[in-house]
Image (cartoon, rainbow, N blue to C red):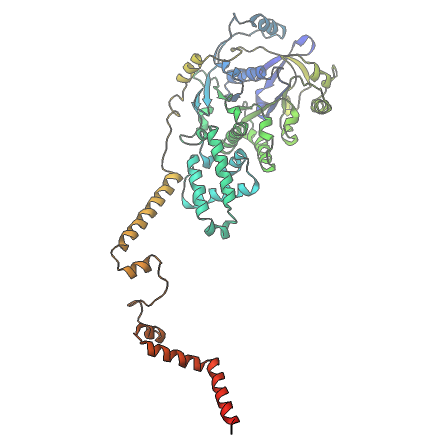
Length: 519
Protein backbone atom coordinates (compact mmCIF):
# COMPACT_ATOMS: atom_id res chain seq x y z
CA UNK A 1 0.00 0.00 0.00
CA UNK A 2 1.26 3.47 -0.90
CA UNK A 3 -0.14 6.99 -0.73
CA UNK A 4 -0.41 7.44 -4.51
CA UNK A 5 -1.22 5.64 -7.73
CA UNK A 6 1.56 5.38 -10.29
CA UNK A 7 0.36 6.70 -13.66
CA UNK A 8 3.48 6.86 -15.80
CA UNK A 9 6.75 8.62 -16.44
CA UNK A 10 7.22 12.29 -17.25
CA UNK A 11 10.04 14.77 -17.53
CA UNK A 12 13.21 14.25 -19.53
CA UNK A 13 13.28 10.78 -21.12
CA UNK A 14 10.06 9.99 -19.17
CA UNK A 15 12.08 9.10 -16.08
CA UNK A 16 10.18 11.31 -13.61
CA UNK A 17 7.39 9.28 -11.90
CA UNK A 18 3.92 10.78 -12.20
CA UNK A 19 1.29 9.76 -9.67
CA UNK A 20 -2.16 10.57 -8.35
CA UNK A 21 -2.13 11.15 -4.59
CA UNK A 22 -4.89 9.15 -2.91
CA UNK A 23 -5.49 11.98 -0.44
CA UNK A 24 -6.62 14.23 -3.31
CA UNK A 25 -8.35 11.62 -5.44
CA UNK A 26 -11.73 12.76 -4.10
CA UNK A 27 -11.09 16.20 -5.64
CA UNK A 28 -12.33 14.66 -8.91
CA UNK A 29 -10.66 14.45 -12.29
CA UNK A 30 -10.89 14.57 -16.06
CA UNK A 31 -9.69 12.15 -18.74
CA UNK A 32 -10.05 13.71 -22.19
CA UNK A 33 -8.79 13.09 -25.69
CA UNK A 34 -9.80 12.28 -29.23
CA UNK A 35 -10.94 8.81 -30.26
CA UNK A 36 -8.11 6.28 -30.35
CA UNK A 37 -5.65 8.24 -28.21
CA UNK A 38 -5.67 5.91 -25.19
CA UNK A 39 -8.41 7.15 -22.84
CA UNK A 40 -9.72 3.62 -22.18
CA UNK A 41 -6.28 2.31 -21.17
CA UNK A 42 -5.81 5.29 -18.84
CA UNK A 43 -9.16 4.50 -17.23
CA UNK A 44 -8.09 0.85 -16.92
CA UNK A 45 -4.78 1.57 -15.19
CA UNK A 46 -6.43 4.04 -12.80
CA UNK A 47 -9.05 1.41 -11.88
CA UNK A 48 -6.23 -1.09 -11.27
CA UNK A 49 -4.38 1.38 -9.08
CA UNK A 50 -7.41 2.26 -6.94
CA UNK A 51 -8.41 -1.39 -6.49
CA UNK A 52 -4.87 -2.34 -5.44
CA UNK A 53 -5.00 0.40 -2.79
CA UNK A 54 -8.29 -0.90 -1.36
CA UNK A 55 -10.57 1.66 -3.04
CA UNK A 56 -13.77 0.29 -4.70
CA UNK A 57 -14.40 1.54 -8.22
CA UNK A 58 -17.50 1.97 -10.37
CA UNK A 59 -17.13 2.40 -14.13
CA UNK A 60 -19.17 1.87 -17.29
CA UNK A 61 -17.83 -0.32 -20.08
CA UNK A 62 -19.04 1.41 -23.22
CA UNK A 63 -17.09 -0.68 -25.74
CA UNK A 64 -16.73 -3.95 -23.79
CA UNK A 65 -12.93 -3.59 -23.50
CA UNK A 66 -12.79 -2.98 -19.75
CA UNK A 67 -14.12 -6.45 -18.89
CA UNK A 68 -10.49 -7.58 -19.29
CA UNK A 69 -9.84 -6.21 -15.79
CA UNK A 70 -11.15 -9.55 -14.49
CA UNK A 71 -8.35 -11.49 -16.25
CA UNK A 72 -4.57 -11.34 -16.04
CA UNK A 73 -2.39 -10.12 -18.87
CA UNK A 74 -0.32 -12.80 -20.63
CA UNK A 75 3.21 -13.11 -21.89
CA UNK A 76 1.95 -14.47 -25.21
CA UNK A 77 -0.06 -11.30 -25.87
CA UNK A 78 1.02 -9.47 -29.02
CA UNK A 79 1.91 -6.30 -27.09
CA UNK A 80 3.89 -8.08 -24.36
CA UNK A 81 7.28 -6.79 -25.54
CA UNK A 82 5.94 -3.27 -26.01
CA UNK A 83 4.47 -3.30 -22.50
CA UNK A 84 7.63 -4.56 -20.81
CA UNK A 85 9.76 -2.12 -22.78
CA UNK A 86 7.57 0.80 -21.75
CA UNK A 87 7.58 -0.31 -18.10
CA UNK A 88 11.41 -0.33 -18.14
CA UNK A 89 11.53 3.08 -19.83
CA UNK A 90 9.35 4.80 -17.19
CA UNK A 91 10.98 2.98 -14.25
CA UNK A 92 8.02 0.73 -13.44
CA UNK A 93 10.20 -1.95 -11.87
CA UNK A 94 7.35 -3.78 -10.09
CA UNK A 95 5.34 -4.26 -13.28
CA UNK A 96 3.72 -7.70 -13.56
CA UNK A 97 0.57 -9.29 -14.90
CA UNK A 98 -2.40 -9.93 -12.62
CA UNK A 99 -6.19 -9.89 -12.52
CA UNK A 100 -8.43 -7.80 -10.29
CA UNK A 101 -11.65 -8.51 -8.34
CA UNK A 102 -14.56 -7.53 -10.58
CA UNK A 103 -18.34 -7.44 -10.19
CA UNK A 104 -20.28 -7.23 -13.45
CA UNK A 105 -23.58 -5.32 -13.60
CA UNK A 106 -26.05 -4.94 -16.44
CA UNK A 107 -29.26 -2.93 -16.55
CA UNK A 108 -30.72 -5.58 -18.88
CA UNK A 109 -29.50 -8.49 -16.74
CA UNK A 110 -27.68 -10.16 -19.66
CA UNK A 111 -23.96 -9.53 -19.07
CA UNK A 112 -24.02 -9.05 -15.32
CA UNK A 113 -26.16 -8.86 -12.22
CA UNK A 114 -29.38 -6.87 -12.79
CA UNK A 115 -29.27 -3.34 -11.45
CA UNK A 116 -32.57 -1.68 -10.55
CA UNK A 117 -34.04 1.25 -8.76
CA UNK A 118 -37.64 2.29 -8.13
CA UNK A 119 -39.57 5.04 -9.91
CA UNK A 120 -39.95 6.85 -6.57
CA UNK A 121 -36.18 6.82 -5.97
CA UNK A 122 -35.50 8.12 -9.47
CA UNK A 123 -37.78 11.11 -8.78
CA UNK A 124 -39.59 13.46 -11.17
CA UNK A 125 -36.55 15.61 -12.09
CA UNK A 126 -34.36 12.80 -13.38
CA UNK A 127 -37.33 10.95 -14.86
CA UNK A 128 -38.31 14.08 -16.78
CA UNK A 129 -34.75 14.26 -18.10
CA UNK A 130 -34.91 10.61 -19.12
CA UNK A 131 -38.22 11.14 -20.94
CA UNK A 132 -37.15 14.52 -22.34
CA UNK A 133 -40.29 16.29 -21.14
CA UNK A 134 -41.16 19.97 -21.44
CA UNK A 135 -41.60 22.18 -18.38
CA UNK A 136 -45.41 21.79 -18.49
CA UNK A 137 -45.17 18.00 -18.81
CA UNK A 138 -42.65 17.89 -15.97
CA UNK A 139 -45.18 19.81 -13.86
CA UNK A 140 -47.81 17.11 -14.49
CA UNK A 141 -45.27 14.46 -13.51
CA UNK A 142 -44.58 16.33 -10.28
CA UNK A 143 -48.31 16.34 -9.52
CA UNK A 144 -48.38 12.57 -10.11
CA UNK A 145 -45.59 12.02 -7.59
CA UNK A 146 -47.33 14.31 -5.10
CA UNK A 147 -50.60 12.40 -5.44
CA UNK A 148 -48.73 9.11 -5.02
CA UNK A 149 -47.51 10.34 -1.63
CA UNK A 150 -50.90 11.65 -0.54
CA UNK A 151 -52.86 8.60 -1.70
CA UNK A 152 -50.36 6.06 -0.34
CA UNK A 153 -49.50 4.64 -3.78
CA UNK A 154 -45.94 3.23 -3.91
CA UNK A 155 -44.25 3.86 -7.27
CA UNK A 156 -41.93 0.93 -7.87
CA UNK A 157 -42.00 0.08 -11.58
CA UNK A 158 -43.24 1.59 -14.84
CA UNK A 159 -46.70 0.03 -14.70
CA UNK A 160 -47.23 1.78 -11.35
CA UNK A 161 -46.53 5.15 -12.93
CA UNK A 162 -48.64 4.36 -15.99
CA UNK A 163 -51.61 3.37 -13.82
CA UNK A 164 -51.21 6.50 -11.69
CA UNK A 165 -51.25 8.72 -14.78
CA UNK A 166 -54.52 7.09 -15.91
CA UNK A 167 -56.01 7.77 -12.46
CA UNK A 168 -54.72 11.35 -12.61
CA UNK A 169 -56.42 11.90 -15.97
CA UNK A 170 -59.73 10.52 -14.70
CA UNK A 171 -59.65 12.79 -11.64
CA UNK A 172 -58.09 15.87 -13.22
CA UNK A 173 -61.27 17.92 -12.83
CA UNK A 174 -61.16 17.59 -9.05
CA UNK A 175 -57.42 18.33 -8.83
CA UNK A 176 -57.02 21.26 -11.21
CA UNK A 177 -58.07 23.98 -8.75
CA UNK A 178 -55.52 22.74 -6.22
CA UNK A 179 -52.54 21.79 -8.36
CA UNK A 180 -53.10 23.63 -11.63
CA UNK A 181 -54.15 22.47 -15.07
CA UNK A 182 -53.67 18.77 -15.75
CA UNK A 183 -54.14 18.44 -19.48
CA UNK A 184 -54.92 15.15 -21.11
CA UNK A 185 -52.42 16.08 -23.84
CA UNK A 186 -49.55 16.23 -21.34
CA UNK A 187 -50.55 12.93 -19.81
CA UNK A 188 -50.74 11.42 -23.29
CA UNK A 189 -47.21 12.62 -24.13
CA UNK A 190 -45.81 11.18 -20.90
CA UNK A 191 -47.53 7.85 -21.53
CA UNK A 192 -46.07 7.69 -25.05
CA UNK A 193 -42.57 8.47 -23.77
CA UNK A 194 -42.94 5.74 -21.16
CA UNK A 195 -43.94 3.35 -23.92
CA UNK A 196 -40.80 4.26 -25.89
CA UNK A 197 -38.68 3.77 -22.77
CA UNK A 198 -40.32 0.41 -22.23
CA UNK A 199 -39.59 -0.63 -25.82
CA UNK A 200 -35.93 0.32 -25.31
CA UNK A 201 -35.75 -2.05 -22.35
CA UNK A 202 -35.81 0.74 -19.78
CA UNK A 203 -38.59 -0.99 -17.85
CA UNK A 204 -35.96 -3.39 -16.50
CA UNK A 205 -34.31 -0.49 -14.68
CA UNK A 206 -37.35 -0.03 -12.43
CA UNK A 207 -38.45 -2.54 -9.85
CA UNK A 208 -37.29 -4.50 -6.85
CA UNK A 209 -35.00 -5.59 -5.34
CA UNK A 210 -33.38 -2.19 -5.78
CA UNK A 211 -29.62 -1.81 -5.85
CA UNK A 212 -28.00 -1.47 -2.42
CA UNK A 213 -25.20 1.08 -2.61
CA UNK A 214 -23.19 -0.92 -0.10
CA UNK A 215 -22.79 -3.63 -2.77
CA UNK A 216 -20.78 -1.15 -4.83
CA UNK A 217 -18.32 -0.53 -2.00
CA UNK A 218 -17.14 -4.04 -1.23
CA UNK A 219 -13.58 -5.16 -0.57
CA UNK A 220 -11.96 -8.58 -0.83
CA UNK A 221 -10.66 -10.52 2.16
CA UNK A 222 -7.18 -9.24 1.38
CA UNK A 223 -8.36 -5.61 1.46
CA UNK A 224 -8.50 -4.91 -2.26
CA UNK A 225 -11.33 -2.80 -3.62
CA UNK A 226 -13.76 -4.45 -6.01
CA UNK A 227 -14.14 -2.97 -9.49
CA UNK A 228 -17.82 -2.66 -10.46
CA UNK A 229 -18.24 -2.72 -14.23
CA UNK A 230 -21.55 -1.70 -15.81
CA UNK A 231 -22.06 -3.30 -19.23
CA UNK A 232 -23.01 -0.27 -21.31
CA UNK A 233 -22.46 -1.36 -24.91
CA UNK A 234 -26.17 -2.12 -25.39
CA UNK A 235 -27.24 0.65 -23.04
CA UNK A 236 -25.56 3.23 -25.29
CA UNK A 237 -28.39 2.61 -27.76
CA UNK A 238 -30.48 4.74 -25.38
CA UNK A 239 -27.97 7.48 -24.45
CA UNK A 240 -30.40 9.52 -22.36
CA UNK A 241 -31.24 6.43 -20.29
CA UNK A 242 -27.52 5.76 -19.83
CA UNK A 243 -26.67 9.28 -18.70
CA UNK A 244 -29.70 9.60 -16.42
CA UNK A 245 -29.01 6.29 -14.73
CA UNK A 246 -25.41 7.22 -13.94
CA UNK A 247 -26.50 10.62 -12.66
CA UNK A 248 -29.12 8.94 -10.47
CA UNK A 249 -26.46 6.63 -9.05
CA UNK A 250 -24.18 9.57 -8.33
CA UNK A 251 -27.05 11.45 -6.67
CA UNK A 252 -27.92 8.44 -4.50
CA UNK A 253 -24.31 8.23 -3.32
CA UNK A 254 -24.42 11.91 -2.48
CA UNK A 255 -27.67 11.62 -0.52
CA UNK A 256 -27.02 8.39 1.37
CA UNK A 257 -23.32 8.36 2.25
CA UNK A 258 -22.26 10.03 5.52
CA UNK A 259 -19.88 12.95 5.72
CA UNK A 260 -16.24 11.87 6.16
CA UNK A 261 -14.38 15.12 5.52
CA UNK A 262 -11.00 14.59 3.82
CA UNK A 263 -10.06 10.91 4.20
CA UNK A 264 -6.62 9.49 3.43
CA UNK A 265 -8.15 7.75 0.43
CA UNK A 266 -11.59 7.75 -1.21
CA UNK A 267 -14.41 5.45 -0.14
CA UNK A 268 -15.36 5.01 -3.81
CA UNK A 269 -14.17 6.32 -7.17
CA UNK A 270 -16.79 6.84 -9.88
CA UNK A 271 -15.82 7.02 -13.57
CA UNK A 272 -18.40 8.70 -15.82
CA UNK A 273 -17.55 7.67 -19.40
CA UNK A 274 -19.04 9.53 -22.39
CA UNK A 275 -19.71 12.43 -20.04
CA UNK A 276 -20.94 14.70 -22.82
CA UNK A 277 -24.17 12.67 -22.91
CA UNK A 278 -24.96 13.97 -19.44
CA UNK A 279 -24.98 17.59 -20.56
CA UNK A 280 -26.38 17.39 -24.10
CA UNK A 281 -29.77 19.12 -23.98
CA UNK A 282 -29.80 19.14 -20.18
CA UNK A 283 -31.90 21.79 -18.44
CA UNK A 284 -30.31 24.40 -16.20
CA UNK A 285 -31.87 22.74 -13.16
CA UNK A 286 -30.19 19.46 -14.05
CA UNK A 287 -26.79 21.04 -14.69
CA UNK A 288 -27.09 22.88 -11.37
CA UNK A 289 -27.75 19.55 -9.67
CA UNK A 290 -24.65 17.98 -11.27
CA UNK A 291 -22.57 20.95 -10.18
CA UNK A 292 -23.89 20.66 -6.63
CA UNK A 293 -23.10 16.96 -6.50
CA UNK A 294 -19.61 17.48 -7.94
CA UNK A 295 -18.88 20.24 -5.45
CA UNK A 296 -20.15 18.50 -2.31
CA UNK A 297 -19.78 14.76 -2.85
CA UNK A 298 -16.04 14.85 -2.17
CA UNK A 299 -16.88 15.37 1.51
CA UNK A 300 -18.64 11.99 1.34
CA UNK A 301 -15.34 10.39 0.27
CA UNK A 302 -16.34 9.88 -3.38
CA UNK A 303 -14.09 10.87 -6.26
CA UNK A 304 -15.66 11.46 -9.70
CA UNK A 305 -13.73 11.28 -12.98
CA UNK A 306 -15.38 12.49 -16.19
CA UNK A 307 -14.20 10.86 -19.44
CA UNK A 308 -14.94 12.68 -22.67
CA UNK A 309 -13.37 13.62 -25.98
CA UNK A 310 -13.08 17.34 -25.39
CA UNK A 311 -12.94 19.30 -22.11
CA UNK A 312 -15.31 21.74 -23.79
CA UNK A 313 -18.03 19.07 -23.42
CA UNK A 314 -18.14 19.72 -19.67
CA UNK A 315 -19.73 22.98 -18.42
CA UNK A 316 -17.20 25.47 -17.10
CA UNK A 317 -18.55 25.52 -13.54
CA UNK A 318 -18.16 21.74 -13.30
CA UNK A 319 -14.82 21.69 -15.14
CA UNK A 320 -13.44 23.99 -12.46
CA UNK A 321 -14.08 21.26 -9.87
CA UNK A 322 -11.88 18.70 -11.66
CA UNK A 323 -8.38 19.04 -10.18
CA UNK A 324 -6.67 15.86 -11.48
CA UNK A 325 -6.33 15.86 -15.28
CA UNK A 326 -5.10 13.48 -17.95
CA UNK A 327 -5.32 15.11 -21.38
CA UNK A 328 -4.66 12.89 -24.37
CA UNK A 329 -4.23 14.30 -27.86
CA UNK A 330 -6.78 16.71 -29.31
CA UNK A 331 -7.14 17.17 -33.06
CA UNK A 332 -7.51 20.76 -34.25
CA UNK A 333 -8.98 20.60 -37.75
CA UNK A 334 -11.41 23.52 -37.51
CA UNK A 335 -11.44 26.99 -35.97
CA UNK A 336 -13.67 25.71 -33.19
CA UNK A 337 -11.23 22.85 -32.50
CA UNK A 338 -8.30 25.26 -32.31
CA UNK A 339 -10.20 27.48 -29.89
CA UNK A 340 -11.07 24.48 -27.70
CA UNK A 341 -7.45 23.34 -27.78
CA UNK A 342 -6.21 26.76 -26.74
CA UNK A 343 -8.74 26.96 -23.90
CA UNK A 344 -7.80 23.46 -22.70
CA UNK A 345 -4.11 24.42 -22.62
CA UNK A 346 -4.83 27.57 -20.62
CA UNK A 347 -6.30 25.56 -17.73
CA UNK A 348 -2.94 23.93 -16.92
CA UNK A 349 -0.08 25.22 -14.79
CA UNK A 350 2.61 26.00 -17.37
CA UNK A 351 5.84 24.07 -17.75
CA UNK A 352 8.79 26.18 -19.03
CA UNK A 353 10.19 23.19 -20.96
CA UNK A 354 7.43 23.07 -23.57
CA UNK A 355 4.26 24.67 -24.90
CA UNK A 356 1.21 23.02 -23.39
CA UNK A 357 -0.90 23.76 -26.46
CA UNK A 358 1.63 22.14 -28.79
CA UNK A 359 2.07 19.18 -26.44
CA UNK A 360 -1.68 18.45 -26.40
CA UNK A 361 -1.69 18.45 -30.17
CA UNK A 362 1.45 16.33 -30.57
CA UNK A 363 1.31 13.60 -27.89
CA UNK A 364 1.04 10.10 -29.35
CA UNK A 365 -1.15 7.12 -28.48
CA UNK A 366 -0.57 6.09 -24.87
CA UNK A 367 0.94 9.44 -24.04
CA UNK A 368 -0.80 12.35 -22.33
CA UNK A 369 -0.40 15.77 -20.78
CA UNK A 370 -1.01 15.32 -17.05
CA UNK A 371 -1.46 17.55 -14.03
CA UNK A 372 -2.24 16.14 -10.59
CA UNK A 373 -3.02 17.90 -7.34
CA UNK A 374 -0.07 18.24 -4.98
CA UNK A 375 0.31 19.40 -1.38
CA UNK A 376 -2.61 21.46 -0.09
CA UNK A 377 -4.53 20.67 -3.28
CA UNK A 378 -2.38 22.88 -5.53
CA UNK A 379 -2.37 21.83 -9.22
CA UNK A 380 0.95 20.34 -10.28
CA UNK A 381 3.03 21.58 -13.18
CA UNK A 382 1.89 20.07 -16.46
CA UNK A 383 4.01 17.18 -17.78
CA UNK A 384 4.16 15.09 -20.91
CA UNK A 385 3.61 11.62 -19.50
CA UNK A 386 4.03 8.16 -20.96
CA UNK A 387 1.12 6.16 -19.47
CA UNK A 388 2.11 2.88 -17.82
CA UNK A 389 0.93 -0.42 -19.37
CA UNK A 390 -1.99 -2.30 -17.77
CA UNK A 391 -1.43 -5.40 -15.64
CA UNK A 392 -4.79 -6.93 -16.52
CA UNK A 393 -5.89 -8.19 -19.92
CA UNK A 394 -6.08 -5.56 -22.62
CA UNK A 395 -9.33 -6.23 -24.45
CA UNK A 396 -12.68 -7.87 -23.68
CA UNK A 397 -13.28 -11.01 -21.64
CA UNK A 398 -14.85 -13.96 -23.44
CA UNK A 399 -18.42 -14.94 -22.52
CA UNK A 400 -17.50 -18.14 -20.64
CA UNK A 401 -15.00 -16.33 -18.43
CA UNK A 402 -17.53 -13.56 -17.78
CA UNK A 403 -20.17 -16.07 -16.68
CA UNK A 404 -17.66 -17.67 -14.32
CA UNK A 405 -16.87 -14.29 -12.72
CA UNK A 406 -20.60 -13.54 -12.32
CA UNK A 407 -21.22 -16.92 -10.67
CA UNK A 408 -18.42 -16.32 -8.13
CA UNK A 409 -19.55 -12.78 -7.30
CA UNK A 410 -20.39 -11.97 -3.64
CA UNK A 411 -23.83 -10.70 -4.78
CA UNK A 412 -24.66 -13.71 -6.97
CA UNK A 413 -28.36 -14.58 -6.69
CA UNK A 414 -29.30 -11.43 -4.77
CA UNK A 415 -30.80 -9.44 -7.66
CA UNK A 416 -31.65 -12.09 -10.24
CA UNK A 417 -35.23 -12.76 -9.05
CA UNK A 418 -37.69 -9.88 -9.53
CA UNK A 419 -39.87 -8.98 -6.54
CA UNK A 420 -43.33 -7.69 -7.49
CA UNK A 421 -45.08 -6.58 -4.31
CA UNK A 422 -48.31 -4.63 -4.00
CA UNK A 423 -47.85 -1.08 -5.26
CA UNK A 424 -49.74 1.67 -7.11
CA UNK A 425 -50.79 -0.57 -10.01
CA UNK A 426 -52.26 -3.26 -7.76
CA UNK A 427 -53.88 -0.76 -5.36
CA UNK A 428 -55.59 1.20 -8.14
CA UNK A 429 -56.70 -2.01 -9.85
CA UNK A 430 -58.23 -3.19 -6.56
CA UNK A 431 -60.07 0.12 -6.14
CA UNK A 432 -61.45 -0.16 -9.66
CA UNK A 433 -62.61 -3.73 -9.03
CA UNK A 434 -64.34 -2.71 -5.80
CA UNK A 435 -66.11 0.20 -7.53
CA UNK A 436 -67.26 -2.09 -10.36
CA UNK A 437 -68.55 -4.65 -7.85
CA UNK A 438 -70.49 -1.98 -5.96
CA UNK A 439 -72.04 -0.75 -9.21
CA UNK A 440 -72.99 -4.31 -10.11
CA UNK A 441 -74.75 -4.78 -6.77
CA UNK A 442 -76.70 -1.55 -7.32
CA UNK A 443 -77.82 -2.83 -10.73
CA UNK A 444 -78.96 -6.10 -9.20
CA UNK A 445 -81.04 -4.20 -6.59
CA UNK A 446 -82.89 -2.34 -9.34
CA UNK A 447 -84.51 -5.55 -10.61
CA UNK A 448 -86.57 -5.80 -7.41
CA UNK A 449 -88.01 -2.28 -7.73
CA UNK A 450 -91.27 -1.19 -9.39
CA UNK A 451 -90.87 0.11 -12.95
CA UNK A 452 -91.42 3.78 -12.01
CA UNK A 453 -89.05 3.54 -8.99
CA UNK A 454 -86.41 1.90 -11.17
CA UNK A 455 -86.64 4.78 -13.61
CA UNK A 456 -86.00 7.24 -10.80
CA UNK A 457 -83.04 5.17 -9.55
CA UNK A 458 -81.44 5.11 -12.98
CA UNK A 459 -82.12 8.85 -13.56
CA UNK A 460 -84.40 8.25 -16.54
CA UNK A 461 -87.42 10.13 -15.12
CA UNK A 462 -87.06 13.81 -14.34
CA UNK A 463 -90.60 15.01 -13.43
CA UNK A 464 -93.79 13.84 -11.76
CA UNK A 465 -94.96 13.50 -8.19
CA UNK A 466 -93.64 10.83 -5.89
CA UNK A 467 -95.65 9.46 -2.94
CA UNK A 468 -94.07 9.08 0.45
CA UNK A 469 -91.05 11.25 -0.20
CA UNK A 470 -92.20 14.28 1.80
CA UNK A 471 -94.76 15.25 4.45
CA UNK A 472 -95.48 18.49 2.61
CA UNK A 473 -98.82 18.88 0.86
CA UNK A 474 -98.63 18.62 -2.89
CA UNK A 475 -99.20 21.87 -4.87
CA UNK A 476 -102.62 22.58 -6.28
CA UNK A 477 -101.34 22.27 -9.82
CA UNK A 478 -100.16 18.78 -9.06
CA UNK A 479 -103.50 17.91 -7.39
CA UNK A 480 -105.46 19.18 -10.40
CA UNK A 481 -103.30 17.11 -12.77
CA UNK A 482 -104.09 14.01 -10.76
CA UNK A 483 -107.84 14.38 -11.28
CA UNK A 484 -109.69 13.01 -14.28
CA UNK A 485 -111.28 15.90 -16.16
CA UNK A 486 -113.81 15.80 -18.94
CA UNK A 487 -113.42 17.36 -22.37
CA UNK A 488 -116.11 20.02 -21.61
CA UNK A 489 -114.38 21.04 -18.37
CA UNK A 490 -111.08 21.34 -20.21
CA UNK A 491 -112.60 23.61 -22.92
CA UNK A 492 -114.34 25.77 -20.31
CA UNK A 493 -111.13 26.21 -18.38
CA UNK A 494 -109.30 27.18 -21.55
CA UNK A 495 -111.93 29.84 -22.45
CA UNK A 496 -111.86 31.30 -18.96
CA UNK A 497 -108.05 31.40 -19.02
CA UNK A 498 -108.06 33.17 -22.37
CA UNK A 499 -110.72 35.65 -21.19
CA UNK A 500 -108.53 36.50 -18.23
CA UNK A 501 -105.65 37.12 -20.54
CA UNK A 502 -104.82 40.01 -22.87
CA UNK A 503 -106.98 38.76 -25.75
CA UNK A 504 -110.02 38.50 -23.47
CA UNK A 505 -109.61 42.00 -22.18
CA UNK A 506 -109.36 43.39 -25.71
CA UNK A 507 -112.54 41.52 -26.73
CA UNK A 508 -114.54 42.89 -23.75
CA UNK A 509 -113.34 46.44 -24.41
CA UNK A 510 -114.43 46.12 -28.06
CA UNK A 511 -117.93 44.85 -27.19
CA UNK A 512 -118.56 47.55 -24.53
CA UNK A 513 -117.24 50.26 -26.84
CA UNK A 514 -119.67 49.22 -29.53
CA UNK A 515 -122.64 49.26 -27.13
CA UNK A 516 -121.86 52.74 -25.84
CA UNK A 517 -121.36 54.13 -29.31
CA UNK A 518 -124.89 53.09 -30.27
CA UNK A 519 -126.36 55.19 -27.48
